[in-house]
Image (cartoon, rainbow, N blue to C red; front, side):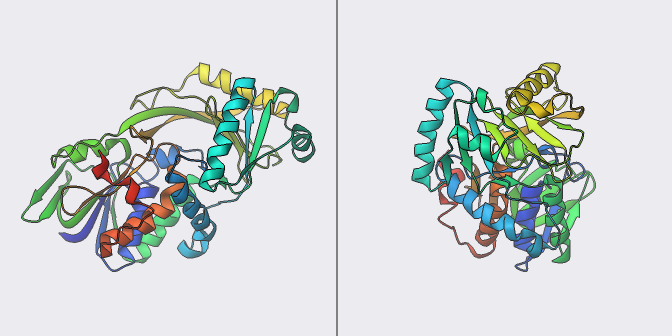
Length: 361
């Protein structure tokens, strides 16, 4: 079989790119090694933020605006809402660090403003302000349901004629005669262009065509609780230790804290994580005391040395990368899909993705 574009990786990122290529008329096939939602998309907790590093903030802002319109554009409700985010400090040193970050955010055009603790108490009475040393509020950030986003892109991809191969791990990627041979256990497909959007496994595939891609894993833990009547408006984040707490539309609380370091192991869920997350969650929002935890899991972020994603064409003609999105991938996925789609089809390198070219390594 021959296709114009093969996309390796069936997460929300891979499907967003595939959709944007297929809707422009190119015959496109996606290869997913497992089932849809197995990878980092299905394990993410869904925070969509604009407070990211340097030039990535511009992509995130574009992504935020696109998230608002995706349900109408794709025809599936992604359950995105602009909940806002409270960024808190519980110690004096954290407060000083937040003040410096605030200055950087302002330079990047991020709308993250300080709140007096009296105002926090008035607007968000469930927050234990006695433990806070500082608080900032970003009203533009929000939450999306990762699996709903994934499904929305999948349905839209199918409608424009895209093909998906599930349980189809790519075992071999070769360049032959100006095109690519993408081989699984079941078939070999010839493609004019290939996009590697396989998260932490992107480097393994790139090696097969002689490329070194500096992507490493960062394992994080997450959990979900039983539902309560929704009352938590904004997501609550403590940047100093990676603490995040949000409430879904159905009332469950989702959260994460810290990391497990450089690991590919998806079975690392620990009691120490449960204990520390629960302690801090109740410390900040006392009403959560006694709430039952339903499930915990591990997800793997794909990271790069400079904290920025890899987006664009490589030194191998016709081979593109879309990986290294750290823990802010959901924020920029709509933007990457649109801009990389334009590049693949028309050769247009948008200024927003130019800083993330794989050529910088």
